[in-house]
Amino acid sequence: MILTRRQVLAGALAAPVVLSGASHAGAAAPVRFSYQRSSTLLTLLKEERVLEKRLAPLGLEVNWKQFTSVLQPMNAGSVEFHADVADAVPIFTQAAGAKLTFYATEAPSPSAEAIIVHADSPIRSVRDLKGKRVGVSRGSGCHFILAAALAREGLSFSDITPAYLEAPDGAAAFKGRSIDAWVIWDPFLSITEHQHPVRTIADATGLSGYSRYYTVNTSFANERPDVVKIVFEALAEQGRWVKANPEAAAKKLAPIWGDVPPDVVSAVNQRRSYQVLPVQRDRLGDQQRIADVFLAAGLIPQKIDATSAPIWSPPS
Figure 1 (spheres, rainbow, N blue to C red):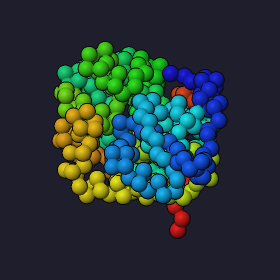
Figure 2 (cartoon, helix red, strand yellow):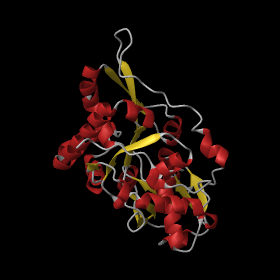
Figure 3 (cartoon, rainbow, N blue to C red):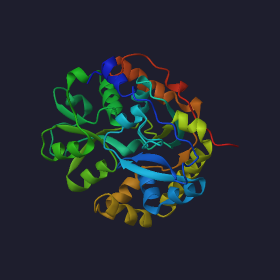
């Protein structure tokens, strides 16, 4: 996939909506959150209505929207708080000129995304992907893992046939063997490992820390840093709870994820750090490396400074 400048910039044309903390005629002002299936901490906060309870005294009402492809809402600014995303996704949003601010990150979890094949596949290494059809979600962290893994073996996207599939479609394609390999993240990775005999030919180790990032519309972050602080603290608390209560967390998440067996949920949670931290600019070097790989692969139209993104920091 080669994104033209027009395609990358298209999503940024819609101006982000700026919300005032004040309510009109006594009505609560909405604060919109997006999430995806891999948004473990946001999902748990949603189920427990934690943010609803904490933001209500400020006259704010929480609205939730689930996405499978998160780039469009991030580029368009159609919600205030965006789904947590793998490290590669902000590269595309920065290239699109999206007005987003980093406000939290999770400590690295490199084994939570991987390139897998069926256990009986003749493919045993990344080098064996040459000439093969490989499923991957466009603009995801796995998109970078695939590009970087190929580059490490002296290959490029021109040496494979990429199939750009969102995670649910990729799962069906992998099951039906219409793709030879799949690059995927948890929980889809663990679910697939549970359902089929698979072989991992590479994960993010040595390629990316697979740090997940949380972003908020810059206009909202500037107007309501108090709300950002509340969300940050809730995420950090939820992350500590998941790690301290693995069995309880697995039981809560299993039905939410579609009656996934608790042992699969536990496998996901063991791979993810869920340690929510402030974003530090001097640790965005991995982001720049991702951006440089994407530029060399023709996946973004121009060089960007990935370390220049706006960052919200919790008050001392």
